[in-house]
Amino acid sequence: TEVIKDFAKKGSITIVIDKKALEGVSADDRKITLELADVKLGNALNIVIDQIGLVKSYKNGILYITTKEKAQGIVSTKTYDVRDITMRITDFPTPEIKLKAQDEASGPDIIVPDEDPPTTDDIIEMIEGAVTADWGNTAKITVAQGQLIITAPREVHKSVANLLDQLRETK
Image (cartoon, rainbow, N blue to C red; front, side):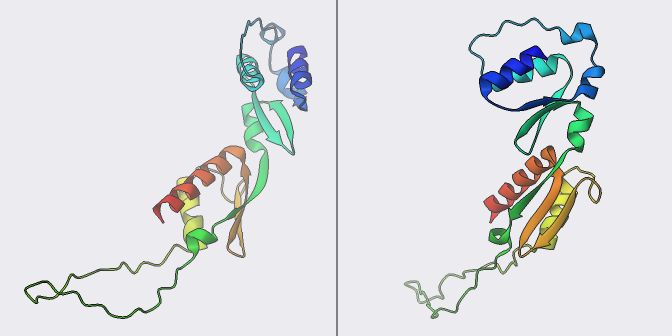
């Protein structure tokens, strides 16, 4: 715990160590000897907590050191604006232009796809089908004015953001 306190002091961050999580780590495993050179503070912290089998999680601007099981249970709420994905672009009528080849044959046929963009319900269905989470319990999605409000663990938020980025790329 002393090295964690040093990290917090040097990095000017608040780190809270879950005492119950430390109870599961033997006294011998808590003693770590490492020599690190030119390593960023965050990476050094990851190395240390990985050595004792714990993980870090963020909540309300505070870094918590805890067990993996407990970290997965910590949820946060984020709003995802998906109106750019669900927006339908209105296609206004334009004058008809006919192109003719030199032999007076008809011009090219231009086929414009007439697909409707996905709805928020479609996006929710995609998220719940593609992202592994305890939907309905620790992970929830609600819709408000074209935005998704998702309460879930951090890893779920990462997966949701990745999926939405992929949807934006295909648009």
